Image (cartoon, rainbow, N blue to C red; front, side, top):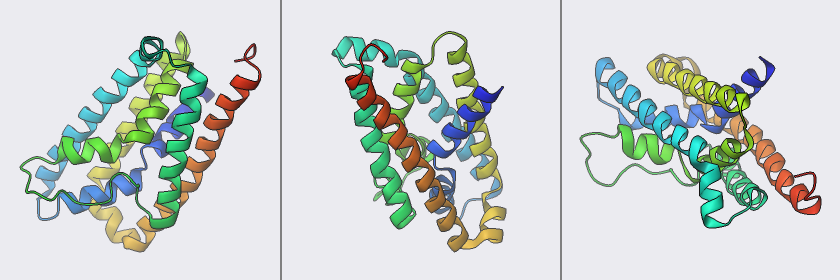
Length: 203
């Protein structure tokens, strides 16, 4: 149970829910509640499909490319740290800060699911977790990931109410706190890769 809760919390912060909510509100401005729910549902389903694909095929991808898990830990740790710094500094993720230039009929998959929810740093981290989880732990990891996305869906459903209560300043503060937590996660992933190189027998 503790692994499930910790995994859920990690994925919850990994998806930077309050930044995603801010982007969701901006992208769906002018739409009614029913249309917003449809966008939220499609974006969460798309993000879940992509995340599960990464979770299950990460190890095979490493083997195909000849990349060690420790190398990917270091690379994804750096990417995640850059994303965390952007959240702490500006309250936004460095890879998804602007609105699409052209008018879109459907923003649920692009840019909401990708790259707002599933961005480069998120992809790298999910690949690492997918390769680390084995057996029953992988099942728990999938449950934690799914739970985090379902929680994000609830936040998107209630986004208008949350915005009224917290305001833009409150959402920005929560995004910065998320960035601090992601920075700690990034450091742990990075150091795991470094220690794997220094002590290969233990990795």
